[in-house]
Amino acid sequence: MSGLLALFDDVAGIAKVAAASVDDVVGQAAKAGAKAAGAVIDDAAVTPKYVQGFQPARELPIIWKIARASMKNKLLFLLPIGLLLANFAPWIITPLLMIGGAYLCFEGAEKVYHLFVPHHHDVDQPEDTPQDPAHLEEQKVAGAIKTDFILSAEIMTIALSEIPQSTVWMEGATLAAVAIGITVLVYGSVALIVKADDFGLFLSRSGRLSATRAFGRGIVRAMPGFLKALMIVGTAAMLWVGGSIVIHGLDVLGAGELYHGIKDVAYATANAIGQAKGFVTWAVTAALDGVFGLVLGLGLIPLATRVLVPLWTRLRG
Image 1: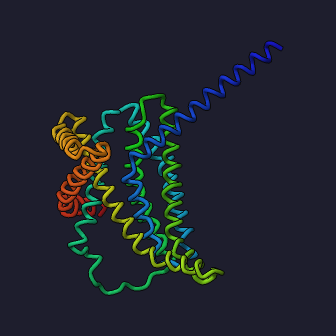
Image 2: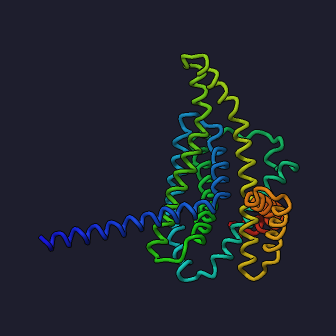
């Protein structure tokens, strides 16, 4: 009997350790995922455009294809690569983060730039020959998966940099939790956004109460403005997070003048205002990081368009 009780105690102890490990994984995943907010918001803001122009019945299947590929890329490719780098070449994490941050700055700045200088795809051009819908869907999904892979790599790298040093199994479990949680969050949100106008249209036509029909019409009218607002928030988040990553990376590499200068300005501003010091410090820091991200991104546009893209095109033949 005493042996059986001892066994129960051991099982209970193992269960407590396992529960604590799960709590640690969830907590670390939440903190790590929060640091990747800029890339996550942009992922959610960019994806809806890939289902524009398709029949409503094809919207959710397209989103599912992209989400499934995103999960596969994160778990089968990016997670093992991240663990290898973290355990055998940790020195490369900061430079990779800075490259990813610079990419976010470039993407955000390019969106701002094209508000004032129309992109060559935005000007009037002769319409192409109509394409087969199935082929067009394959092209759109392929393009979305490529964009998602870049953003997913940035998300996983940011998350990896925020995980406290621990065993490779804990790091792997935390990264897997981040990958699954963010993919569900992003593409669940995208599905809701994409189908919101259909839901509003359904309410406006089938609602039994006038208030219900009015609510449906309000959803339909609000969606274009909501999508534009989401794009603005996504762009601002990219510039803020990208600029912050680069500035912090410079500090880690020993060039911390800009990092400490921004902190000094933020603290001085908060002390001068004297109220909500924590929020003011964060807001000023984020604004200055975003301004730096915009300047850096604008500087990278000619490098990318005149050097990197032609070079990559030539290498690909």
